[in-house]
Amino acid sequence: MNLPKLAITRPVATIMFFTAFILIGIMALFRLPVELYPNISFGEISIIIQIRGGIPPTEVETLVTKPIEEVVSTVSHLEEMLSISKEGESTIVLSFEPGIDMDFAALEVREKFARVKNKLPKEVEKPIIAQFKRSDVPIMILAVTSPRRTTEEIRKVVDEVVKERIKRVGGVANVEVGGGRERKILVEVSQRALVKYSLPLERVINMLGLNNLNLLSGEIKKEKDKYLIRTIGEFESLDDIKDIGVSTTPDGSIVRLRDVAEVKDSYLEPTGYARINIRPVVSLYIQKESTGNTIRIAQNVLKEVAKTKTIIPEDIKIVVTSNQADFIRKSIDNLKNSLFKGAILIMLV
Image (cartoon, rainbow, N blue to C red; front, side):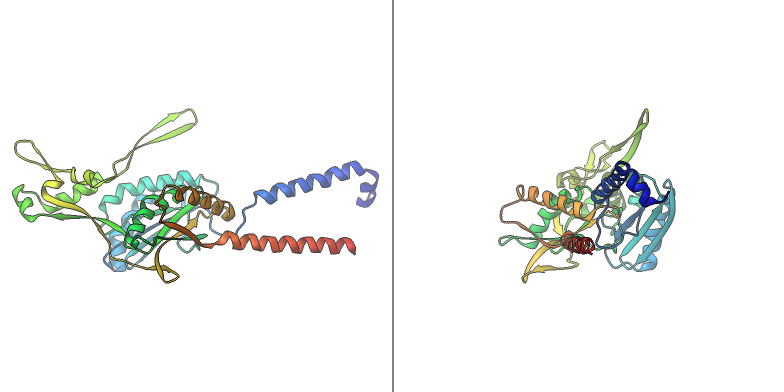
């Protein structure tokens, strides 16, 4: 029995068969990820570390890249590890076996990295550990400006409020900030105070690193679930830094950092500038996880930006200067129009 005759003799079965195909197609249409370019990076986590002071590539490899490689090489289900060391920057890309939980893998990588963090040079900046590649194009660029504030004041609001809220949006892998000078905490140690307390400078540096650390302290297993316990020890204010105990006197009194050094707010030297309509601004470059849906993530970011505007000062404005989702929507609309016109022509023929 051929297919045309079967379709004619059993119309109900034929209609149900094609209806099922149509329903499956509609479900797939709403579930398929929508991207501007094909996604060819799965199961990868990048560790990107900037080092101040222009350290040459050979020293970056010896002092930064290799120590990190040694600790993260023991991560579960790791398939391949690629590292690149260049002047002032170390990049390590970890490739994992297909089908594993990448969120748990990223958590394990962060915990492994925490073990070596204090052994890295003091010039190392806060690392970026996320499911993306540095070469990925930002899906959205935001410009933050104010007619009454300096770029340093704007950047402080961006770093403390805007950036942190956007990073919490599901699917966002990394948020880089450009423009304005980045805040740094300056610790000016008094040589006279060190001599007074017979305290070596290296001990002060080591105590700063040891007290500014989050560590995995254990786990709780409950049936099929496992909960990780972390101790939070990162500094939250200048007073936290000033109150660190760096030594003790012969009578048992604690020598705190405020007794041997002055701790104050300062700024790093600028490494880049951002402008819009000739006016200096602070820009945010938002990159998504490799498996995320660009349109959905962009929508969630815009919702979070709208909420953020209600809690930051009124004179600070956030403007979207680039949104990859808009271009994708236009491309999809053009495709739909072409398909619709093609279907009409086929029916007419």
